[in-house]
Image (cartoon, rainbow, N blue to C red; front, side):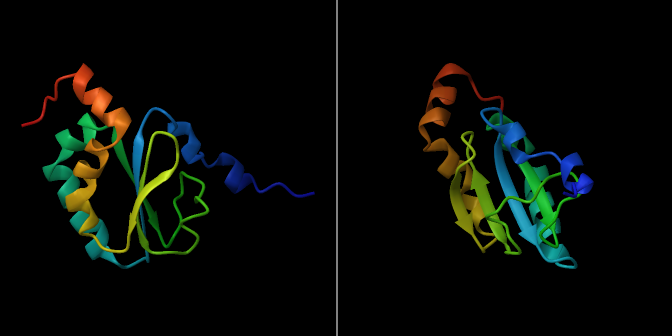
Length: 123
């Protein structure tokens, strides 16, 4: 039986369970528009991402050198919002998903509790 050491060294996204929400973005190599536009959006809204414990992980060419590829990515282009529980809460093939991501998160029961228990530092 052979062991795939490359996979063994990659972290599982399950390391983020109950700690962070994830925005998984999978795109083809060379599609710099998706990565650049997303990074620009993150930079403009960093406080909002931090406030919601939202981490962004890119899968370029459907792979990431640090993380195991989740089964739902499976050579597929798209944007996945993953909740604290590891479940996919939202999926889109359109970058416009970014405009709705905060309101989607804010409608989740756990986020509502977070908003009640702490004050946002964002404007």
